[in-house]
Amino acid sequence: MKDEIRQLLETCIENGSEADLNSLAYLLNGMKQKLNQNRSTYIDGILQMDRKIDEKTCEITIPIHPILNNNLDIVHGGITATVLDTTMGSLANYILPKGFGAVTNQLNIHYIAPGIGESLHCKAEIVHKGSKTMVISGEAYRSDGKKIAYATGTFFIISK
Image (cartoon, rainbow, N blue to C red):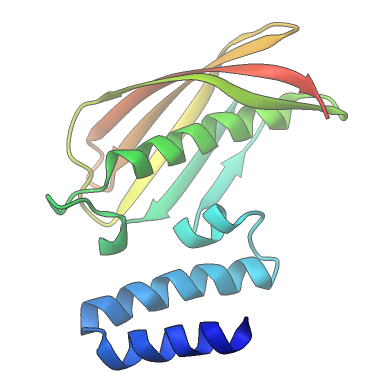
C-alpha cells in the first residue's frame, strides 16, 4: 500500500501544476494534523476546522481554499452544508450526557450568497431539546460578514 501511495504522490508531484500542488499540500497538511492527533476526524483535518463550543453555541471557522470551490469559483454548497452540519452536530453532542450521541435526521439549508473570501464561519444555537430529538439552527458567514446560508437540523438522540 505504501508503494502505491508513493507512486501516486510522485505522479501528482511530477505532473501537477502549481495550483494542483498547492491543493495537494493543503490536503496532506490536513491529513498530517489528523495523524498527529491535532484533529478529531479526517474531515476536521482536511477542512482545518477551528472550533469554539459552550453550553449554548458552537462556532466553527474554516479557511477558504480553492480546493473547496465549485466550477464557479465559490465554495461548493456541499462544503457549506458539511460545515453547518458539523457545527450543529457538535453542539448537539456537546450538551448530551455521557453515553448518548446525536445524529443528523434532517438538514435544511437556504443558500443566500456565494461563499467567497478568506474564511467561512458557522454558528449554531439550540432551538429545541427534547428527550428523543433536538432542533438546532445554524448560520454561515463569509469573511466580510455577509451571511451566505441559514440552516436548521433535526438530530436523533441515541445511546452510544
